[in-house]
Image (cartoon, rainbow, N blue to C red):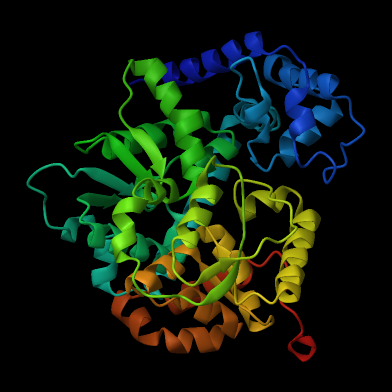
Length: 444
């Protein structure tokens, strides 16, 4: 496939939606971040028209540019459109157009390369600080050491990249599927990139090549179903790349299913293995960006004997926690409000769904009177499964030397450069903290 034909197909999809859009403004009116972004007084129809101008002419109104850049991918806009338009996709393409307008191709490629290299290094180092060689092989990160399969798996489990920073979550996914007797193959990590970093940099050529390469790899199962963990990868493939790939080739290589929805779909099969009571009052940290995932997570928790769910009056906004980085003050306010309400409600645990939620929240366990756990921690415990959350243990220490000391054996075993490890811990772990931890002298 030629990359130009892919880009032509991407542009044609945009053109079709531009023609279908009536500028009614319903998507803007439904958007949950217009007020935090300072756009509450903006005219919905005029702002939408400005987004269309960005896509057609390369420039739109200041309000339109601000809205596109502030998007947290909540997906509420998709629900209210009656004309077959995906406003979230158009906003993503508007951001690409704005990025391309402000830089030449070499600069875009460099931004994409730099972002990919940093992500790859962070993922590689943080996973090696936590995992044995055997665990890395199990997660598909040593493909040359994986035993060859005689035939195709029933399913492909696609980790994405960044869940490997918190690998106990991915390992619990595999443990649960093993108990259920599911035949799967794991794919993911930087060698199976979805191309989102290159797309954000405005380098659509490289993004499409990365995505098409990964699509070809993922299309290797008997059922044509890929289970996805990462919501960012899910949106990148299901909304940006797979429909464009299908338009270019005439083929739909697979269907992608979020792992939480897959587990919920198989809840009747799962129930007999939910044997151990887990006596916890919990609050669920929610994001609505992938339809049905928060609801599936809640139903899975309700199926665990002993769990009681406490609802907190906190807005559910965005695709995942780090999607709110476009509005950092609002992101910190939401996190703090949720922690305060969880403490006031007296819950035993605040429960994350995605890996980014877990990374940004887990160290707060040090300062608040409840635990930070993941849905899979709860389900796994009920099934008699356990994976140590080394990431949380390390991050709570807030001490680079202590973390290096604890991981010294794995650092030597994997041959990780100490200076590199220190830099990744500082920037890729401890620096990944939107709401700062409390002064330890002021713990509640």
